[in-house]
Image (cartoon, rainbow, N blue to C red):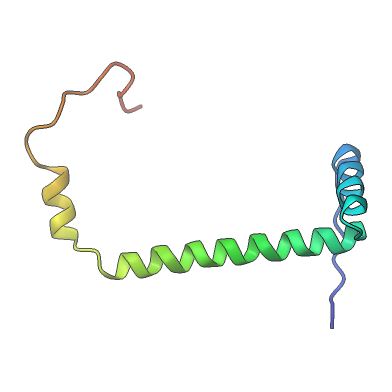
Length: 81
């Protein structure tokens, strides 16, 4: 069962969406639904990836790396605001 969601798009974006959908033999609604689904899956996958990576993080190691001596000095433009 599909829920209804009203989306107001700028006219130029809506026109381009219509053109792209037509090229793919889809309605604008179908194309928009596919695009939204792909984006949601991508965001969820990225979130899961970084959450999994964070589980193995060792704060002590991170602090040791960040506080180590050496490396090159800051370059112009590296200043923190």
